[in-house]
Length: 370
Ligand SMILES: Cc1ncc(COP(=O)(O)O)c(C=O)c1O
Image (cartoon, rainbow, N blue to C red; front, side, top):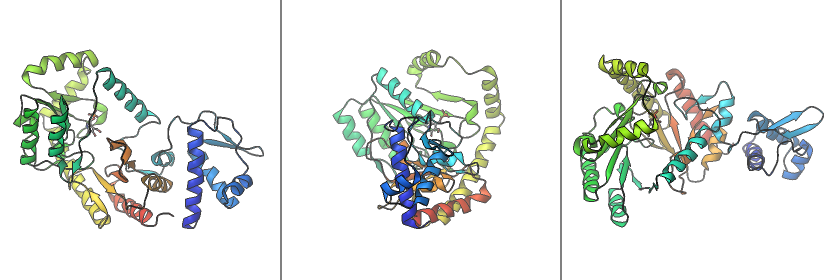
């Protein structure tokens, strides 16, 4: 396909997908014949056939021989994300998640978290990021303007930007929290990947830091085993909240996790993962040299800002067509202003395949629109 033909096919397919998803084309609706679709959009009949093939492959339409193409009875209730399509191909390479998800899960979780936040009268305020961490001046200004009760932060190996805050930045954060009497929530889920990090916020300000981590990234997300280190005078409230919302982990999981922490299994596993992540980042640095990449040399993911004239949805879809699933920036954006960027998780393809996958990704982006 020439570049413009592929772009036309994608454009028409996206329009139809959006109308099916928002309900304006209802289940069972007979869609135009290939010839009519081609005439309406000024595309070749073969392109119209490709449009329907695309919609069929992601389960939005069905074709009945001799009768035509119809909107599927129960289309998946969500937007058409580039990564969905790739998941339908068995050969798809998933650079978006560390483990598979089912259609609709992300929306379900997002909506529930919003509801929970609203029920607790929590409102979230974003703080802009500089290249190496949060903008502490902006945070201080926000705390002066409004009563901020807690600051959520990932000082060691931020997801998705990979930063590790310096000792000075950490002290700056602690000073702001003390000045404005805020709790610090330190998410250390990926901290084990950093080789050397300055002391945790929990060590600098134990009186106001809630340190949260889990074994999801280092051992297995299936364990569902996490832990919270809370200031002494608030520990009771955390225990009560955990009991009210979760009760407790099954004993066998607690026993396994405790044993693996105590006998050094977790530490050994973490060292292997650091090594693996380093190798993967080195391949990514090499293949993506010259592109706008932000990453920690030890992290499992990277943040790729696309050239200004490219739209991330289109790029994600083109990648999905080639069997590469990526995460778009929306999932990480805290405001309506979403950067045209992709987050690439490097951990799921076998190490020997990673270079070829990233080369294909680069090629696809550079050829855009195909
Ligand atoms: C920023 C961040 N915090 C925490 C977690 C840990 O999640 P859990 O321990 O619930 O699996 C993740 C996992 O994706 C994460 O990306």
